[in-house]
Each structure stands twice: as C-alpha cells, then as structure tokens.
Length: 182
Image 1 (cartoon, rainbow, N blue to C red):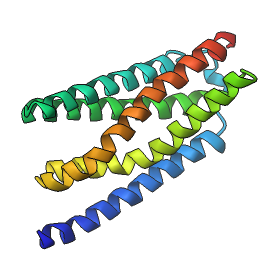
Image 2: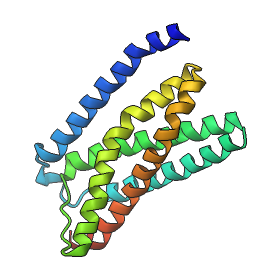
Image 3: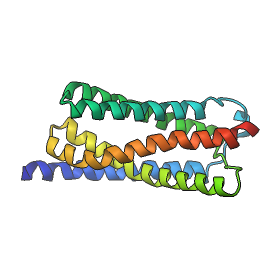
C-alpha cells in the first residue's frame, strides 16, 4: 500500500499542475483575450449547448451514484465515463464560446444580480476545485486504487454535481436577462 501511494504522488502532482495551467488559460481567455467582432451573432447556440452538456453531466452523475449504491460497478463505471465525456465536451464548447464571443455580462440589477453573482462565484470557485478532484478520482479508479477512489469520490461527487447544476442555472439567468438583448 505504501508503494502505491508513493507512485501516485507524481501523477497527482501532474494533475494539479495541469489543472492550474487549464484554470490559468481560462482566466486569460475570460479576462485578457478580446473576442473578434467577426463572430458576433454566429455560433450563438454554444451557451445552450454548454447548459445541455452540464445538465447531461448532472444526470449521468446521479445515475452513476444510483448504480454504485446498488453495487452495479460496470454500469457505474459507464455512467461516470459518460459524465466525464459530457464535462470534457462542455469544456471544449465553453472555450470555443468564450474565444469567439468573450464574456457575457449580467445586466440584471438589485437582488437578482446579487443572487446571480453569488451562484456564479460559487460555481467558478468550485469548478476550479473540481477539476483536479475529478481527474484524481478517475486516476484512482482507472488504476484500481478503489479505497482511495471511494475516499475522494465522497467529496468529488457533490462538488462536481453542484458545478454541473449551477452551470445550467447560470445559463438560465443569462438566458432570461442577457441573451434576450443580443
């Protein structure tokens, strides 16, 4: 057991470094990169696609939880791989959307703005936390370290689920307030 933990440290370290680089790139994309006006009005389906992918991820996460609670390991694994695929597709679509269109400002005011910004802040912070946790949880599962997988999955699952659900909620807020005026 000691040897397995030692050999996993470089991989977990690499996961943290890659996650940090990914988050740095996304922050650059959101706050430094300026979208070209050439894409204004084009590919406007991407925010809805992002919400759909987040919603499908949330559903497959819940299905995966159901399967593991009923000791159906093969179905659990398939569900979690599908959730990972939905999250990965979301990330690609999110990057493309922000590269093409930039950031969308929320135009609402008063309590609805406070609520939106609170949800958005928790979503962003927990998405930064979720990325290395999801990758580490997958690493432990795929390498057969199921005790470690279970230990970290207890924390990864609710954070990943929250990020997926609040991704849809953020889209709904933007759809109601910002996307109507484009």
